[in-house]
Image 1 (cartoon, rainbow, N blue to C red):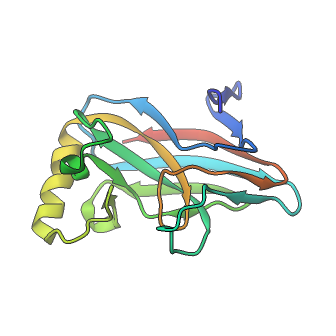
Image 2 (image 1 turned 90 degrees about the vertical axis):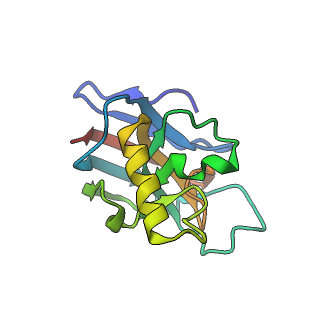
Image 3 (image 1 turned 90 degrees about the horizontal axis):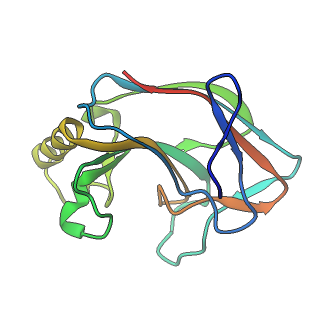
Length: 171
C-alpha cells in the first residue's frame, strides 16, 4: 500500500489492497503519552466484501478483521523478543461498515497487550513495561490484522473497502 491519501479536511483514507495488505499506520512521537487515544473513523465496503489476512497455522482465533491503536517505545527494532514490552496494542476493534467515534484511555487496565499478549508476565511487570513505553515513545498509530494477530495485515479477499480516518489524536 502506498501512503494514505489526504481527504482535504484534516483526515486521511486508504483502500485496502487486493494482496499483501495494510499492516501498520504510524506517526513519530517523542513526547510522553498520557490521557487517551481518540479517533473518528468511517469504513465503507462494497456488498459481499471480505477482508482477510495472511494464512498462518498459529492463528487459531476466529478470522475477524480488526484494527488496534498502537504505540511503540523508542529503541524497538521489531525483531528482539527481549523488547516485547516496547510495542503495545489496544483491544481489537472489529472492522465493519460504519462510522465510529473511539476513545481508549492510555492506562494498562484498558486491556492493552504487549507484542506477545502479556504471556506469563505478572501484573506488576506488565504495568511497569507499559509505563516505561508511555514515557519514551517512538511512534503511535494503528495496526491491522485478523484473528489472533494485531499487525500482520489485512487485504481484500473479495470486493472493496475504504478506511477513512477523519481524526486521530493522543491527548
